[in-house]
Length: 158
Image 1 (cartoon, helix red, strand yellow):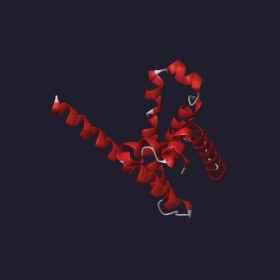
Image 2 (cartoon, one colour):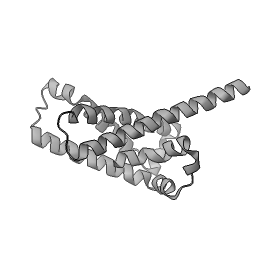
Image 3 (cartoon, rainbow, N blue to C red):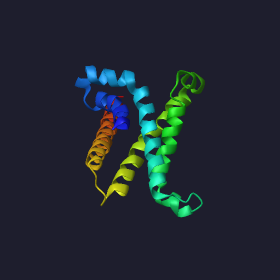
Image 4 (cartoon, rainbow, N blue to C red):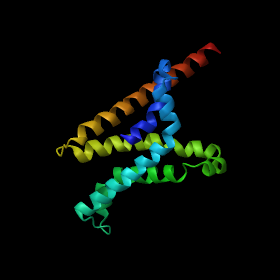
């Protein structure tokens, strides 16, 4: 849910412009970096406990094939966390923005991961995680639709 909280401000501001200045949205914007780092720490903890519980064989290709979406998401989270600092923003400039758009790829991978790994093994956390990531993914698609409509209207007015 921490990861979802990092995506909420931008998506809400575009999909629901009336909430642009809402206190919760502004607070999430201010805390996004810390929340993102917390999400990464939680993901690493999750990976650690899954590896311990299942006794992964790191020399077996099937291990990576079975965990491709989770591992890919963790790699993206690692890149985003490593560059979530002022020095990286200054050093990478526009490339920093491009790199951080990987978060939307991670969003789709995470939705796939939650649905794929938790189907048939539901716990108390599963529906919360599924609803959170599927809701934010739906809102993201609405955001892209709104941006497309805006660009289309702008192109037609010219």
